[in-house]
Image (cartoon, rainbow, N blue to C red; front, top):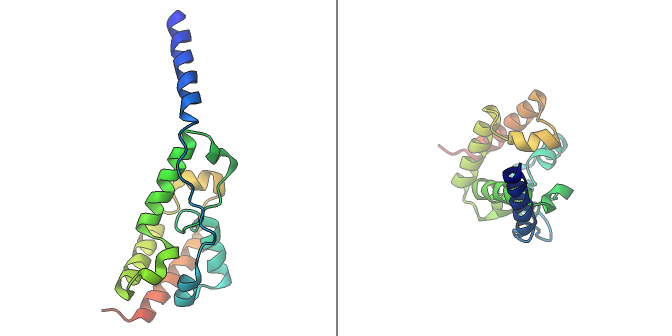
Length: 151
């Protein structure tokens, strides 16, 4: 029993100490969606899907839930946001050349079709993307890609 108490005490101390490790927040002034919206022209329905399921991890501004203040969850969320922005960041859309924009939309389609996006861990707390929403998002992304006329 003494061993269990010692392990418990060490875990509590570690949990308290880790609270002092604070990752930088993804808190730009705005999401800076102008170039993305101008270029891709999402419908109201697509915009709602993107706002609900995508922008928090794939833009320069994240709306953090209360539990994002608690380590180790804060570190886990920070990792997901950084990785999401690395692969697809709508706030950087104006910096992408046409071919890269096409590739990013192709990746979006692939990830959504395969059920990889949004992440399952995100969906647990924010709700899953429905099949209808998936179809709407994929149809929109395919339409944008077709307008690029890249061969």
